[in-house]
Image (cartoon, rainbow, N blue to C red; front, top):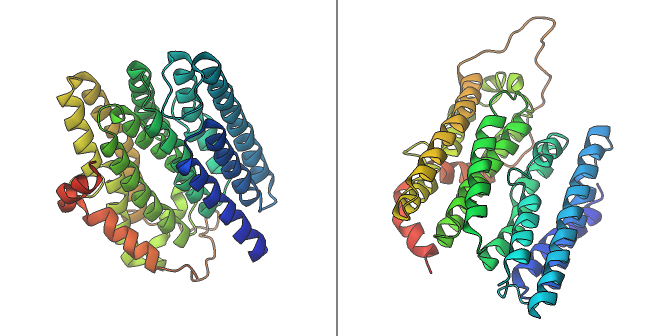
Length: 348
């Protein structure tokens, strides 16, 4: 892609998110979300492959539906209460509609069906943008409106953690596994949103760091399915040794960074008297852990078959910068001891 066009599109992505962050009026927030969607569409369809075009079309239709619902809900709120302020969502009807529209935007279950399909059609770089940056603007709005319907949030959160764990079990495609992982992590964030927004923010940031590392590892290995991972040890042995730690951090195992948000969320839910919810969420984390272990096993403990029918793909040395990967990997593995400091920074 032409670097000028690429720079313009990335600027559009940044500007859309910034407008949504800075807005206190629903129309402006909606405009930021639309700019975000329109800026990423050419990035998604840049490889003129039927799969990429299909993924782009699916993404455009779901985001347009979510944006239309959001606009309708904000107009309804203005009609019922005379308020356009984002903070002033008092009526339960527009509040519920906006929550569901934003859930569709970020891919929370049961409105998640588009996410694995779309991510599977994209290359890993665009997939990384979709899994991280594109979640920021809708999440900022969810944090601002503080949805009053607590039952809805807990249902969305629990369904997402269960679907995210269940859906990834039988997958062989890495991008679909990462999509289900994304759904499960978003579920955890939504569960604790009404009780401790700072914990939600902490979970979002740690999820970004861990997902960034995982995508970069797969990108360095040019891997899109589990079988390709088995050949990575010949190309990057040190990275292959670290990759299981990154994956297990995503799964939430102590003493890795990924354990920190799960620990704080379970603690908060138990404090609020929601022990059954916390138990279900913890059990669903075991489902996710299974497929991370499967990836770790495929990457470090198996050697790919070297017969004529299953030849390993020819791979040139990667030109990818390794500094971002080194930084994010260190953060993905080592941040757990800093939990008190990070919590203190994020607590208002």
